Image (cartoon, rainbow, N blue to C red; front, side, top):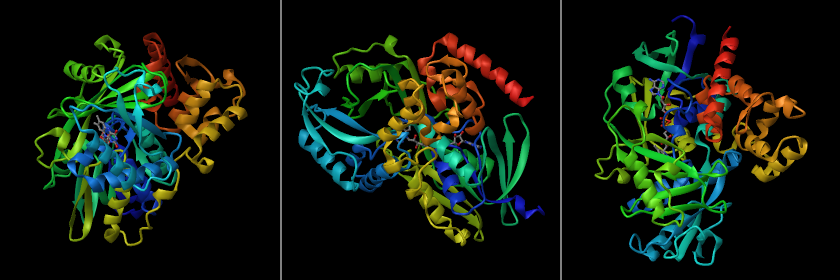
Length: 505
Ligand SMILES: Cc1cc2nc3c(=O)[nH]c(=O)nc-3n(C[C@H](O)[C@H](O)[C@H](O)COP(=O)(O)OP(=O)(O)OC[C@H]3O[C@@H](n4cnc5c(N)ncnc54)[C@H](O)[C@@H]3O)c2cc1C
């Protein structure tokens, strides 16, 4: 290795939320950074979450006060950084005396309101479900409820926006590129990165960040051939999507008979996202899939509370992910800590590997900040933490005021139907102008594929956001598969395959 310009400061393995968060922070602190992701960005756990930026009300029952406080504080930091993809949501929690006494729920919500320095989000209130509009969808036997605040996040977009910002600050982002071998030599790491088409490249790095989520142990033991004192516990969680069956923007939180809680969230306008399950998992994290018993479990928990009785045939779509939790030997998968720890290993003060065990979408930014602070000794020139104050791409709206931004967007482009303007505003924020590329009418957006998907958006995603396959566009970046017919999806797949051929030629 003669050419020192080829040496990166940090190689990040894993393009989930934690990996891209670290890459963004690192490059902004002046470190030369490369990130490799074996599949699409966010294709692992980070596109399969419950999509909440939340303190985690139920973690209070496990006395995780520090985790809850930090996560609560982080909600408002992230809302300011990305008001297009992160927004406040109200959660209605019907009182169910067999599950938890009212005083306990009230105490939990009091702590929830006050632990995290809430400034923008409204606090808790009590509801009479027999008279409040929020009670209309709920069975008459549930007469009381509490309503509190948390935030919604488009998880897959959070990942892509962090990667985009990292790239624009100078990081090298390599999706569909797996780290297949990493070893230390002369105080550096040498990594072999293998792309999906089989081509390999070698990179040198002063440090490795192992952000492989459910695969973290595989990287340590099999790719880097190191030892570790820590383990991950894989816990599967599944979600189902149905039509929305109530009026209003509020979400519901139902206490189940096994003491778990089930979220019922408004999703994609007229749909509902229901989850999740908590099932020990020892298979391959790439093969995770929803089981019929999980669908039955979720429907039963919801039907206990709602006048609408959902049936398995109402399920339009489902997805599963595995939580990469830090093994703490808890008996119950729901009780395993949602906190994270780092493991740092080096040789003679050089070539460190920082491995991440655990974590949440909610804490990704703060995790990245702390992880890099832990690397200060290896990079004395590294600049200070910065990400708490800087918006993500598209999030630079005056006063982080999304509603005003959307109104202005619509008045600047009156030809856009309101639902298309809303779709672009939510996904791309201030970057919508780049996507529109000067279009003056709907014809300027090109071919319509179904749902809210037009050619201009797809081209933007292919050029700017690493979208290479129809799944990258439909399932992760736009979710338009939920709004398209099977025939429309197939026609889109054919179109994109042809386009990729043209682009590659
Ligand atoms: C059902 C469910 C619900 C959840 N709900 C919430 C929620 O509402 N709010 C919240 O805050 N958190 C939630 N979480 C937790 C959150 O989703 C995860 O903690 C987070 O996404 C983990 O991110 P990560 O970057 O560590 O892992 P991942 O997103 O899995 O990223 C790791 C990446 O590493 C890549 N990789 C693996 N091996 C290699 C290799 N050799 N080379 C290159 N790349 C490699 C993988 O392909 C993967 O993309 C939920 C999780 C689940 C499963």
